[in-house]
Image 1 (cartoon, rainbow, N blue to C red):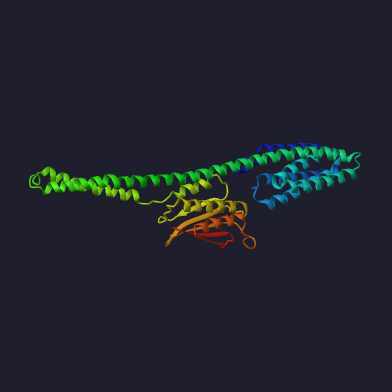
Image 2 (cartoon, rainbow, N blue to C red):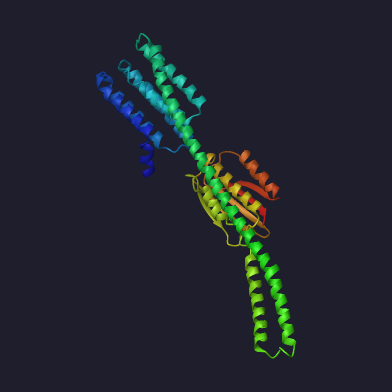
Length: 368
């Protein structure tokens, strides 16, 4: 509900509702025999416009159908009361909606067709200079189109920056983990090579002293020899603990990658026995999930992406399933081709399929 009102109360949408209200006020001057039909048509236009502004942007087909209905109701409104000269402002609202949904070329072509029909309607109504009226209205339409175009461009740039920032955060998390592992390995080597070597030499010397009759009976020598042995065992335990590979923190990186996306939701599951210590493999897994998120949002109309990372023998298996709908055969675009290239570089394998509900399933196998 909060999302509904937030979309409804956007500044450009409020301007559209204010314009519709102004047209509604002018309907009191329409002939009585067409007033009811004019009011009904305007209510229909308002309903289509309201549905349009609160509907998710990825539902392109439904939005296109609403645009066609909006254009039809606006033209009918013009036909019912052409002498008022107010109904054509509905076309300005329609053009703004068209440029927020369609590509500029498609929107321009549709606007030219609608304006041609508008010209024919007012010429039939007996206007002395219909072309002038149409050109004035086209000017307002162009202004609305430019405002929407720049607003959409700014929003798209903002979204791209958010995605780039998420990508940087995810990559930084992997790099930080990799740097910590490298530092831990360096410390382990230093302890083993330096402290371990010197402690071993000291213990050998203490054993030699303990074997000497002049010092062998002294309690201090025996205690020092025993403590040196315990300390050497402790250092070996620390070195072993430092060398234990816990793997890179993939979960944090993947969640950081998906956090800014409003859709799809990431359902992530990583089995406890999965250990990814190679930064290259971790980077590949990160990019695979990133591409799956992009595909699910743009092409599959999905609201949820399930990601499961598990281990099978000497391989790490990544399974990704979305809840979208695939129509027809699976077509491999640049995104899937990029996935295959990354996996082939690591001598892995990629398999595509569909879920029982018709969504896309991606299985990637990489050497552990």
